[in-house]
Length: 188
Image 1: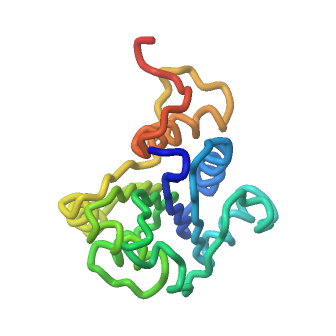
Image 2: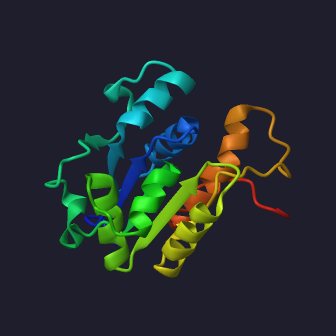
């Protein structure tokens, strides 16, 4: 990657519980150089953010936020060169629409573009338990090339705070974004 080339990432925040995962990911990405990040949020994502984190202020998001119907956003087209998309947290409704190619808003359109261009779509579902429809939709997306990375924290690093627990998931996402940021590594 040359100095002028930026790694381009879409972060989509769907309306599932787990806003802290999205916030921690954006916090960590905000210090990485040569990144271009676009953010999409569903209406329910904003509601959950306020329930779980506190008042939502767009100015607290360190990246440009695009409207859910903004089909002129660069990542609505494969030609813009966005190579990665993370849906965090990923609701089962959004996951189902993505699995069936229903591109009715920018979030589902961007996922469709990432898949059709054979780029990296990372879905972070936070639902539990899964029903058979959820599992079948995850199977379809996995067969289409998506990575299903559930928000299942690990505890072998002995996390002491909620942020440290959340980081066990966020650090795995960062690994899948091909970024080299310091994190706990098994056996090191």
